[in-house]
Length: 210
Image 1 (cartoon, rainbow, N blue to C red):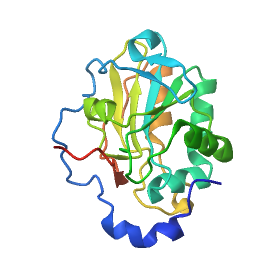
Image 2 (tube, rainbow, N blue to C red):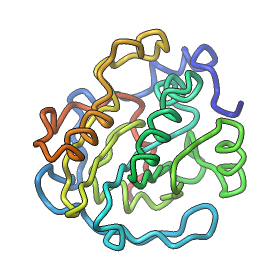
Image 3 (spheres, rainbow, N blue to C red):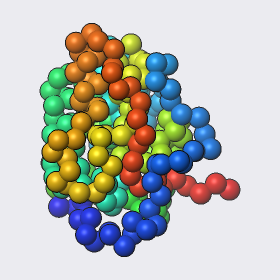
């Protein structure tokens, strides 16, 4: 599998910024407000325009296959299971990699496709956001950083994938998956109980500012 074991990256953790207390120098998508629109091409060559997906729930997942926090959720199969549950329930799941070229997690479309195949990824689209434009539009801070957009096109949830901010796969059991909880409440016509949390993970590897 091309998602790399956290054990191989344990020394890197000292150099991996977490979301706690981090404030990006750009605006963030706000819960309860319209999700910023974007247009991109996924790794399979398909055009993806967020506004065209109105009428469906959409999940945005910021990812980096070399980040130990992302590895936790993929090597355990937790992220793939969440993707499958969401998409089988009618949602569109878009994974976005905003790592700049030469930075940790950066890939070509071909490499990204190999990673997806090896990991059994069940997302609808994967976008390589090398410029960081989409990530900065949303204020994505970490990998993973999750957003749930409802059928009206408004941000219904923003934050962490779950309630346990560590790299241990065994902590997934018993953790609250905020994304799936939000989707369940949206489908039930209820307000999202936990609409915003602090994201955790590796800092998104954006292109350095000039």
